[in-house]
Length: 251
Image (tube, helix red, strand yellow):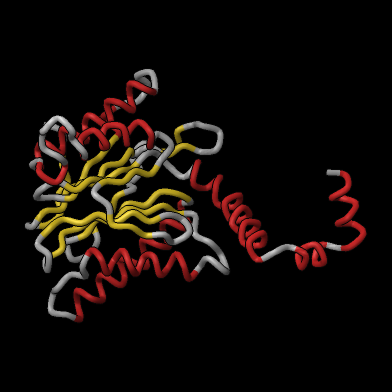
């Protein structure tokens, strides 16, 4: 380590940078980006996940917000937002200023499309693609520390859809997805429900009500793993179906 520091002092940072290969430069840049984005992602909110069932796409999240000290700062935080047009849901977690900026951009383009095209909403895939465009555009100037889930009903395919995006602009259409620190425990429930090996129904075959029960099972696992310290009343679940977006409450 001392030799490396002495070499940098003697030859300069730019000389050391030019000596690196393209692969080493790429790895260095990625590590620097992750170091910048990691604190905002970790402290940017609670857990959020989504899944696609037979006749709906579901998004569920906590409503709590914790600061760097681990103290709850808000208990009514809204991570999930129904977008204008009533066919898509946007889930955001991360740096709150970045989340607010990205949310306002997507709400604006959805409203503009809805007004200019005779009340036709922007499709879920178009919302996810434009969201990826915004994140990628800011990567070289000021990266956005956000993690995104976009759920919606696609009128052309007549089916629900779910898109997963991360803070570097990667995008993937998935049957279920999770963002947050408790993702291994939530994934354990979704993996068992999504790929049944016992002949039972998989996620794409279950009804909306069964999907809500799976959501409740995920939160029960999170509460169990946290020692029972989580309040299940501090969660909210939205569903987007063929008829539109609705907030689901526990019956």
